[in-house]
Image (cartoon, rainbow, N blue to C red; front, side, top):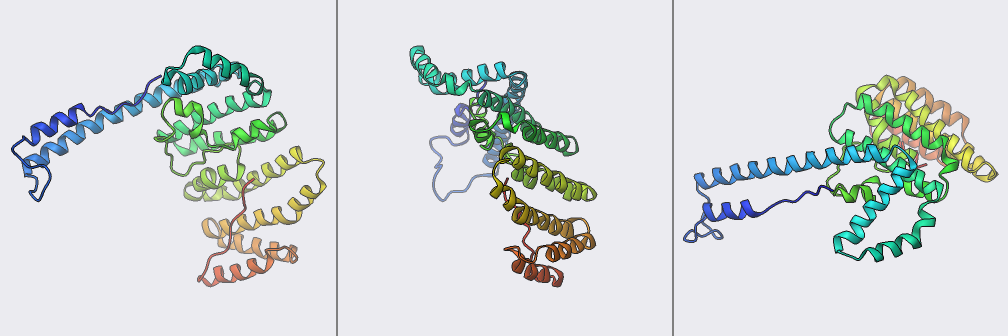
Length: 312
């Protein structure tokens, strides 16, 4: 696997050339203009090398992640390859150590929900890498929403360890660590936890609609709310208390967050009307008093209305 290795050889050589032994490096003496120019030129050269390594590593990772996400079998085999590389080969452990670990953990890791989660993590890493490389969010966001909807549709097959894995950050998986992306993979307005619907919409989907397509913000909120409702129906079908709590507390809370978001980002008229309707329909809601005060502050322009919907 490719690894980013920053060589200090050229830096050390440059320091010898720029600062001969007769010249004090540390102290009050300032750099000459010629020395400063040489340092900046050297930094530019190093930066180009580092950037080239980064691009090469990400391209290699993207190809590998795409290939391994093609099937559950391929995802599992790639997972084991990454574990062997990270936890055993890099410390020059004997193969028998890896074999013992594999035999001890194989049954758990080969559970259908776990293998499916591995494949989905790889698919989400592909989306994340594409977002990191600047692919237009107008192309990424619809794929992202489709991806999350697919998780919800198949949540019964992912229950337990599978969903737990998907709620973890993909840039902390063995896949990302094997390509040293766990520190370098940083994406603005992006959730790294594909199994957390609220996080994906709050951090990745809604920022796009607010900035580039405010007319579509309301429908995006409806999709998010629909997915959370469906997730609960599939995973808590026999839990009457959870279903009732969702209907009476969480659902109004999400509609309130939607109304505030619309007021701020799309249409004050639509947002204000929605907030009034929510308050009228939910006078007994635990947040009703706080909503009233926040709404007044919002209308007066001297405060902010709470728009927290919470995580799924």
